[in-house]
Image (tube, rainbow, N blue to C red):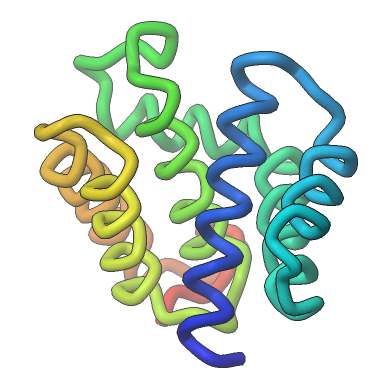
Length: 148
């Protein structure tokens, strides 16, 4: 899958998860609205849908992973956009073997620069670096998936 398609899909997934976190709108409706309003390639919508549904399926594990890596920042005090970016990236690192972990981290940092605060990119990079170092070299059964 082309880098541009994945990048667009991450943006759509991030916006969908953020809206869900704030309003609890139905994610299928939100994804459909994005697809229609932007006339997105079906591959973008398919990957965005995979990310959104994967994050929601594993949200408890993702949130506990975030909390372990950023224990000084309670989840309820974390910026919602940062939390959504982290969830997408951690899902890609732990459960999606189609993207190298370092690429998922780089993309998350770029999303943080675009959508987050001035400090978001450093925060995202630090949390994801901590998570990656904890899971590198662990068997897939311990890490949820093989990290590349």
